[in-house]
Amino acid sequence: MNVLLMLIGVLIVYLAIKLVFRYNWNKGLGVALEFEKKHVVNGETVNVVEVISNEKRLPLPCVNLKFQVDRELEFPGTDTNSSVSDLAYRNDVFSFLANQRITRRIPVKCNHRGVFKISGVQLTFAGPFMNEINVLKVGSTCEITVYPKTVDSKRFSFIRSRISGEAERKKYMLEDPFVFRGIRDYTGNDSLKNVNWKATARTGNLMVNEYDESVSRNVCILLNLEEDGVLRYDAVDEQAISIAAGISQMLIACGINVSMLSNGCDVDTKSPVVINNGSGIGHLNNINTALARIDTGITMEEYSAMLEKILEPDNMRIESEYVYVLISASRRKKLQSVINKISRLQADMVWIVPHFPG
Image (cartoon, rainbow, N blue to C red; front, side, top):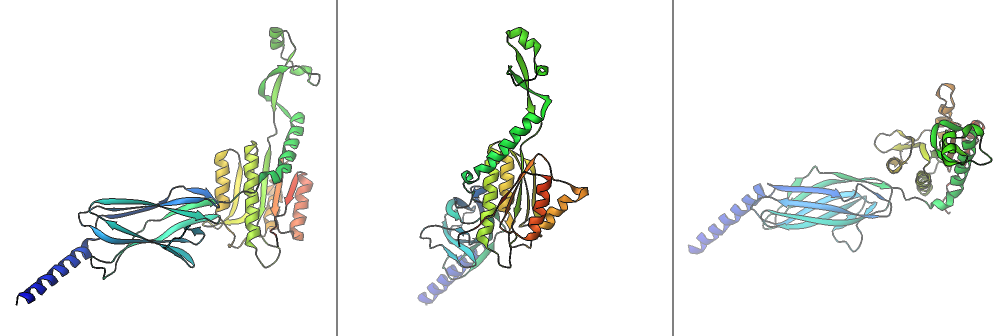
């Protein structure tokens, strides 16, 4: 009889503990996932920060945090908590005392340009006796933008030299008398109309006014990601995007204004990437972000058709003070014809043909 009562008592305690945990395990349980940086460069490693808090008196012996990311985000090292198939799946185990918060930083290597999100976040609890499955789906999502890795700017130093030389030539042709730079000593090449007589009388030496040029140094990058044939080579596309990023970085560092027109489409808006003229670090970040967001799998408009639109009389956008840098592996006859038209209107045109060995 005593044994029977003991068994009944154990069963009641077992059921009570099981029900208490089943209906209370997810109360006061919070989850936050984020990347330590909003953007990194392709090939860099960044930490995923996991923060889970148990804000109640009930301890939790074993809670699993599961989420999924794109397979291009790699958890390096001998990692037994993740698996890779079509996506990379992560499963981390936590054990909580009452009113405890746990923070972990998980390194992840970014192996491809793009925008990547953490999704499918959920917590699972196997119960106090590890014999059931309780699931809490969490709506928390976060993303990271992986910039394209830039090519070595030394390979394209000829572009910088050409732009600087052209701007210097135009400076002497088109000095702006309304943009005053300063006063300097007179040289034999200066015009007498620029002599500053007050400064000359004050210093005893002939002094002249110096003005800034009215022509700014501007480059428009024409990024074409269409292929010549049916097959698409991702390596060539990525090389073209990396070249565009490298040239943009090089030119902006020299104080040159950069704009861009591409038939590559944004991953969310599905619209071609168009970036207005600008300079500075903020503008470079905008360019890198736009390049990172290009999805080469989206159907693109034929690039020659895009360029023909800007040649229409009502939409003329070919500017005489611009240097145009075309980055295109495609060399279709129609594209060559349009480029020849632009070249006749604007002599400063550079065509870079990206390729990949083999």
